[in-house]
Image 1 (spheres, rainbow, N blue to C red):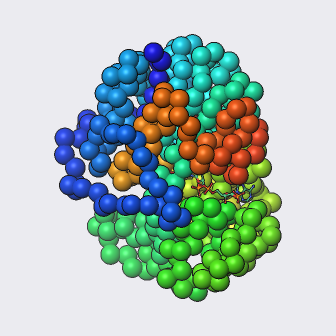
Image 2 (tube, rainbow, N blue to C red):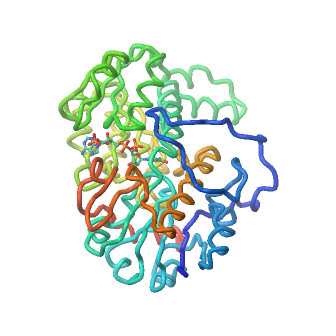
Length: 400
Ligand code: NDP
């Protein structure tokens, strides 16, 4: 019998939904590279339900309790008096989503002597001190690919939204105005612009593919080059460094994991190398950008716009400067938690738990840390170390 602690975001303010806008989800058989979707033995939810909030419980309660396990579900994750902190001493498995991350710092890991599996219901395990997990022999796994396409769609939406000045124009309508000139003095076409992705992994490549029909010039920077056939098919320009790429781009999209090599990558110095009036879209992780440098770049016009859905910490305090900076198109962290994505990552979480409790190997592509070292996707995409520093600031959201 194990105790599983599952940290999820709060239910909607009006309560858990009783009905939904649509009746079903499209059937997707495989991810674009051929990887199969999650394959649990069974699921106990209807795809299309809200699963990522506390009452949705990722659809796990029936399964886990039928196996004799204890499931604790909470949204109360930050600060020393939180439910998460209280449950640490007997938790064997901690599940959380990057949207509402249970920060597992070295101090918290030390308070969780029974912890064996830290499971990310989503993609991106930077909220876990990976070095501490390696040192303690804790397995870290995530549901690779479950929401990569969801994010790619959000990126395309945000690029179009910023460049075409959608949000301010919408606001004029809501305010009762018809202020065409106010709307269009910051509105451009993306056609012919140069767009570059920092990393061309699952999300980065999917963004490039989706932008190709807009007749944009496509660039990427990654440590490893894509196959020549893909570069040719999409007409991609590869850059050996991020500096080399940003100086020729009108739009830059960040799709790299957060790890010690990428923390604070977009600082004052790199932002100053971008074209004046460039747009920056970051749906990867807030900490990849220097918080104050982004605000200054928008205020001076070095950036024409910034959008994304990732912040640090999460939830962002009410006085986080990105809530009020000019020309932004921020959302709370939602791109990877559409109802469509939730069905996939809830099933993937169930698959990983079934493997864990039945002693079967977890798919290699789901592994980030295993056997005391980076493993699977983690060995390919991450570097050792810790990127959770400063996460205790998340408690400010509750108290502010
Ligand atoms: P992938 O693992 O498919 O892609 C990551 C890419 O980043 C890989 O190509 C990797 O290169 C590259 N990379 C890693 N480190 C560096 C570096 N220092 N310099 C250049 N390239 C680097 O992951 P996804 O595309 O699925 O996801 C990417 C990130 O997006 C996630 O880690 C997560 O942080 C974020 N994300 C956000 C979501 C949201 O809801 N907003 C949801 C899902 C993901 P290589 O492996 O070739 O070394």
